[in-house]
Image 1 (cartoon, rainbow, N blue to C red):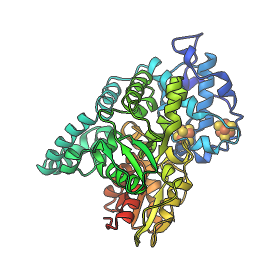
Image 2 (image 1 turned 90 degrees about the vertical axis):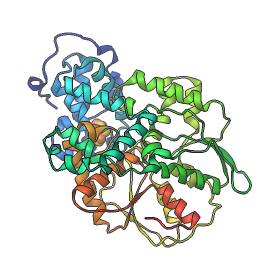
Image 3 (image 1 turned 30 degrees about the vertical axis):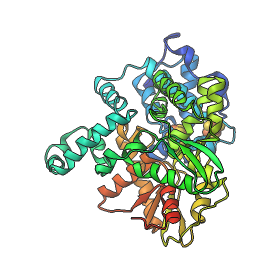
Image 4 (image 1 turned 180 degrees about the horizontal axis):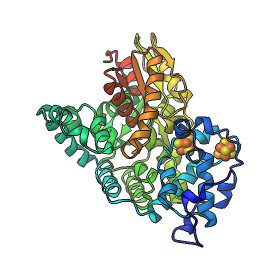
Length: 437
Ligand code: SF4
Ligand code: SF4
């Protein structure tokens, strides 16, 4: 493929960060076959090769060889990548695009001088989202904002004049209640009946604050299935958001701290119910390159994966619902977890499981993607919502908080609604015999 080097800028010799561009061997695994192109949401958006996996790998090759420099155009093609990993599962040559883009994002952060507003916007995101206590302070502000009438006033006056990124942030906010503020998790939950396994649960950051019901359902289901559950106190962020945005050092510090928090308990498995976090936790061994990190990662299980492998013990009550299952990218592509949530939901009497057309495509949430690339995220999200609605479902099952927020936001903008729940909340409702919204 001929690179548009005129638009991208030629590099004169070596430069800062060249030593950390992705390894040549990983880059050369790409044989330019193009099988990944139709699976790539940004290629579907614009039909541009440089916004496809193949084109981005070519840019990495240019950076590695020193024939390209990190111009705004080059950095922009990497920024527009969702990190959805649809190209990883589509690639017949086994190209490790996950590793390639992770290393390239770190290179972008080290070598590319972002504009002032971009830096401020990212600084705000990363001083907020990885910190549950700060997110709780945000919940207070959101409660005041929505209950005082300020939200109505802003939406009808100044908001349309604000930059797209700020409008997107405002539109994405989920409905919050006092439960978001005061929900706490116990430190330990006993197994119901004879104990089968002992597990630790990672509470997540956004999950803990914005979807406390998902963690509560996780504890109830694990207990009902005979697991003793520990939820170590003082857990911080797992570092997924930071790593997926190229903030390597910050991410590694989060990872070390979380491993330390969980080191006091001997458990059979470490359970996570947020897809993006799970994929990153399973990567600690590769990232940190220590025996401790490898042992930690080996025990990490997504909650769907864990329960699907555990013969069911708790009785399932019927749920007469038509459920569209949205596959989060970091479940289906990054962790290759596809059959397990289907298996769990299919085990609920009365439930009709519906497949979302083109379900391998991202919803546009992708970590902080919809906060930094709102235009592209909107295009991608609109396709996802069309496909979800085409199922005729009366409930959406989504295993990642970011995906749920993104799909709900687009539905609200269209004046439509579809209740959403994590698969574990649906299973919990069936086991406990309580109705879902
Ligand atoms: S499918 Fe794999 S080998 Fe083919 S172009 Fe895409 S990344 Fe390269
Ligand atoms: S990670 Fe997703 S958006 Fe990025 S190149 Fe691969 S398919 Fe395209």
